[in-house]
Image 1 (spheres, rainbow, N blue to C red):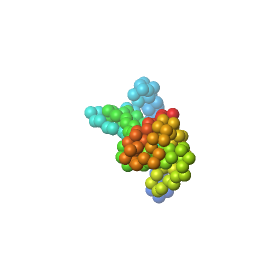
Image 2 (cartoon, rainbow, N blue to C red):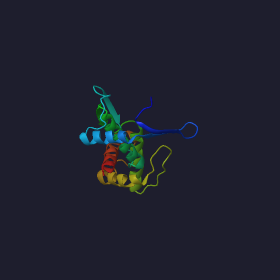
Image 3 (cartoon, one colour):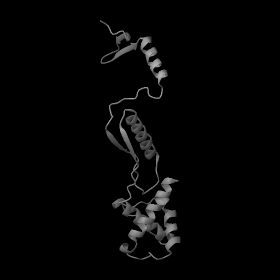
Image 4 (cartoon, rainbow, N blue to C red):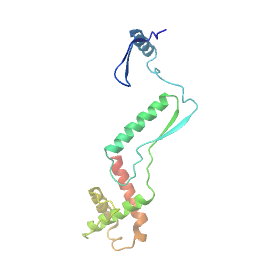
Length: 174
């Protein structure tokens, strides 16, 4: 017995099959949507299950870019679909402001700070030479004057790490 939901079926080349659904199928779908548009398509597969969707999670070492935006849109859409499927969804934007990359940020801002004092500096491999740090170096100079010029890293690393991270978070928020 043929499925009455299928009005037409044909082989369309190797590995392809075209199916045309009967008009009654679409009428039933539209009727179901109109009866309860807010709930149409909602599933119960996730009921009682929790899921955490972490997206973007940019390290505060530089400006956001289009890739972060793509991740945010995709992550939010995925979280919304999981929610619609009945899952209890936690959405998380993780600020990874610890570890080696934030120390590299602090060292890079220190170099921009030295530049703000008129010194020539070289950005070695593994530092962030981006122009976005020029203003951060100048702001650090404005805040602390020459307190860190020629100081060893142990003297300034923690303070500049905190200062730099706060400056990058302000940039990300704006």
